[in-house]
Length: 311
Image (cartoon, rainbow, N blue to C red; front, top):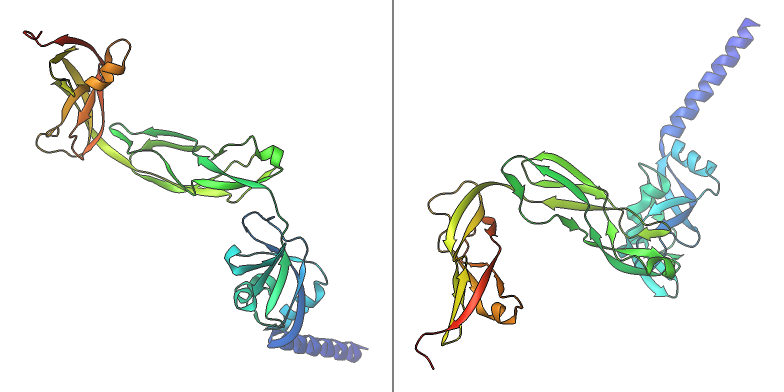
């Protein structure tokens, strides 16, 4: 009895070793897998209308081919580049095997090679209503002392296509990002942020890259005289107060006289079209190192008079 048991175990072990050895070897077999193509073709549904059979002579380990044969008809979802498709007519799109080969492992699994049985695979994508809307960043960014943003947050993409029922997307004019939160910021920011998808819709992108230039600054306050521009001949435009305080922010570090040849003025044309005679203080010739400036007061009272001695 013991000898019989030992013999059976030896046979089973031999068969197991033989199976493992053979299944571990690379082999080739004809395999057909149902595939549901997913893509971001403009004006089309994200998923194909139905699965298509993709047949190929697949070279892989015996274990891999055995696993594929046991899948039966369970479809495989494969994300494909929209540029790989060619629109033929109606809802039909084709993808050549030259492009399909890039998705071999997504279809048949890792470490597989395939020779496809046909030159083209045809899939159908249903039309879908859409429109283009801007992406608006939502942020809460706090800066370390003497650091500030050099402009606005930049997004890529800065707009997306929103898909859905026409009545649903008609009232949507923008898409928001999730909140970008940063604290004690002392350097430029770069990263990715998810987009908030309005209920009942689909977006052409799920996230965006963001960037924000941040610089250290030097704050300087200067008192300057306010000049006038575009005053007609024979007229005088008096400005009150005649001087204003300018609060500058310059990129750190600075050297020499950072104001350079900057000048500040009010424009007679603005005065002429105003109701109360108030004109905004404007600047010209600001150096490149200027991040921002603010006049205090921002507006001056202007009074027009004739040049003395004129009729």
